[in-house]
Image (cartoon, rainbow, N blue to C red; front, side, top):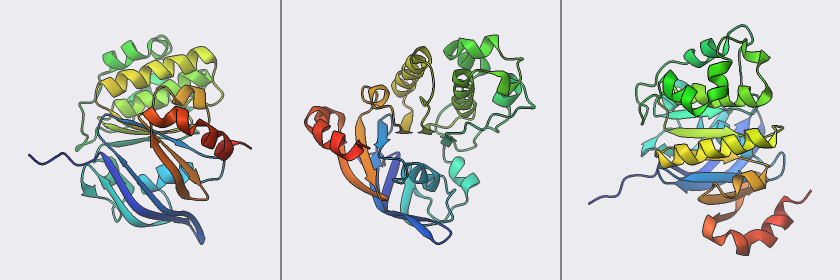
Amino acid sequence: MQAAPAAIEIVDLHAWYGESHILHGVNLSLAKGQVLTVLGRNGAGRTTTLRAIMGLTGSRRGSIKIHGVETIAMPTHRIAHLGLGYCPEERGIFASLTAEENLRLPPLLAGGGSQPMSEAQIYEMFPNLAERRHSPGTRLSGGEQQMLAVARILRTGADILLLDEISEGLAPVIVQALGRMIRTLKAQGFTIVMVEQNFRFAAPLADHFIVIEHGEVVVSFAAAELAEKQALLDELLSV
């Protein structure tokens, strides 16, 4: 019996912003239901990796397969309909809409790999949003806005989540809630790629880690190898 294709498989990915060559041959593979944490210093190419997967960079070369489908030449809207959802660092909450209106805004994905979460399911996972559903989006706290940004993706039916620094600047109690959310989503079969600076948050959640430096993957290892790689990580990630 033939094995199912990887949820994400990237081979020799190069990406540019204008004339600036940012990614230099990135390779990674992630199975359905796994969590990958992307580490690296600021400016290393971590966010560009997420944006390149979504087709949001100036140009791309190489191979990016989503559920076995080659996407390197696809526009962003077609990539999204393969079941991808991107949560950028700036969250993208609309100030003129309530939390509930923000949640309802994105369309359902015709080719999403999971069933869209209902509003009831989302409010069960994020009770803060249920309480603040009629509040303007930017009147929410930073943590509530982050929850809303992720919840908005879950409502589309995406089964692969690209999360950029979702714990940044948030109170510890909110970070803990986001950690519980990721564990729940992983148990439900979601595939998650996280760019994170908060190593304490990311370490217990991930199945795999990569470190990007100058647009290249310099270290790739499984969670079981974390202890033996710690000294190397400290060296690579120190400022």
